[in-house]
Amino acid sequence: MSSSQVDPLVLLAYRRAERLPDFVATLIARWRASFDDAPATVLHVDESTILELGLCKRPRPETWNADVGEIAEAIGIDLDDLASFLRAAEVVERFGDVHAADEYEDGRLLAARDRDQEDQGGNE
Image 1 (cartoon, one colour):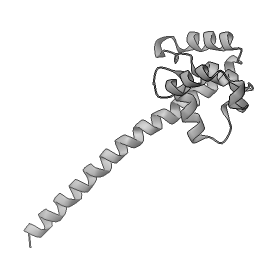
Image 2: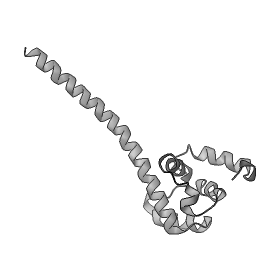
Image 3: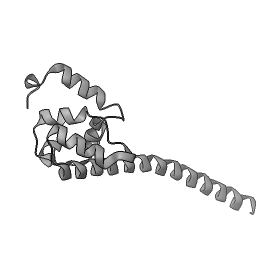
Image 4: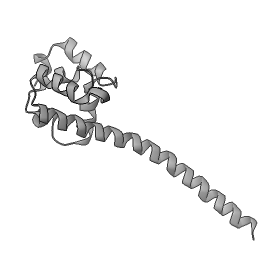
């Protein structure tokens, strides 16, 4: 879909929403960065529907099923397709958070190795 078919204000709002963790647009961005299949293909919708979806607030953990159902009905997306898509994107997001923790862990292990080498050097 060309950008001339999209309202520039909607596109601007979507681009801003991609950087705000409370919007589905952040999950769509995670999906695009991690999977080959386009979100529109997976959800069987056009790109303008993806923009509309991205401007929705993310489902809240405590009311996730109800929120996903409400979004699916409002946007006109199959409930099961949307739920699977959002869960997969959330998993990718969580793996990204874990990866950041792994970097911290690697640094801690490196410090432990340095300490072991110092201990061995002192015993000689």
